Image (cartoon, rainbow, N blue to C red; front, side, top):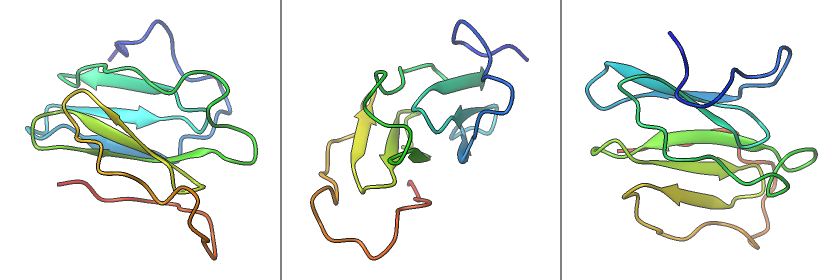
Length: 106
């Protein structure tokens, strides 16, 4: 399958999270620098702009909504909505005892 983005994740890139589409006919892969790669019927709704995450604050989780939108979460507790995903806030600025490493959608 070919991703909906213009390329493929760099060889050796960390891909901390993936999630399937609501109908199970596609999936998104999140790379730690915030890029998202879409496969099957997964709509490409953008990734995080360069410099938002990466290095010591990697993107760590992608989770989907029932309508095929998604959120991206980063290790510092930030949550970024894409498509129709509501902006329900984040844990950015909250003291965390450890980095966020996963998340769950609908």
